[in-house]
Image (cartoon, rainbow, N blue to C red; front, side, top):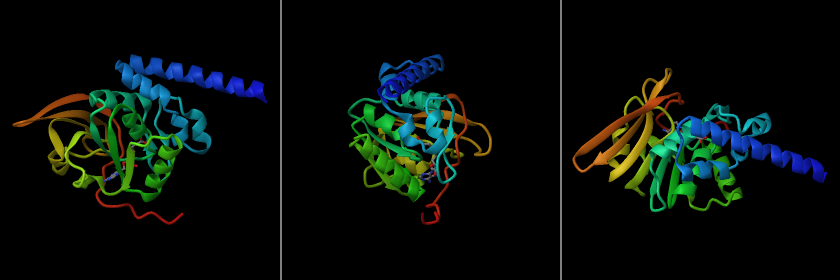
Length: 224
Ligand code: SAH
């Protein structure tokens, strides 16, 4: 019924506006980042009953026992990357693909790796559905980075390591920025922004976050 369709769309628009307000209050001020989040339907990266909760500012379950990040965390991490349209970006931990989709709207090229093959497959399909053609989803152990495509202008890790992985820092271009959660995986972690200088690194902490652990090796997924 046309009437119902209209109602549904206007509700979504109101929810998007509310989410943008929440992002602003959490410190996401970058207009391009806010616009990228506004334009990306988070529901497309969720399934079943969770689709209806897409615009709540909470992390939600996805398959393989993983989670899609909280929108404010996605906003703050993306803002910290200081992206521009010339950037080649590597993301570790595709999960649903939502964060990669946001990155894709603000960069030239995005490579994203995921250790669960089913998640990588689903994320690839959603990118196609949304016509995001500058994202490549790769089923791989992200702790190794992506040597074939290195160096990267930006690296975003969306799973928690104890320290910034040395292999990833090595794949960052001088002047490049890496954002990642660090700390023990079962507690609150610290969000870290690392800038690679000609002769070392500059570190800045951005607050507390909670991510699933960065695990080595591919996951042993049962065939669907
Ligand atoms: N960026 C995701 C949320 C991150 S969830 C989103 O937007 O939905 C963290 C993801 O990191 C999980 O899917 C987990 O499987 C993945 N992960 C953990 N260790 C990894 C590794 N070594 N290589 C690649 N992915 C990894």
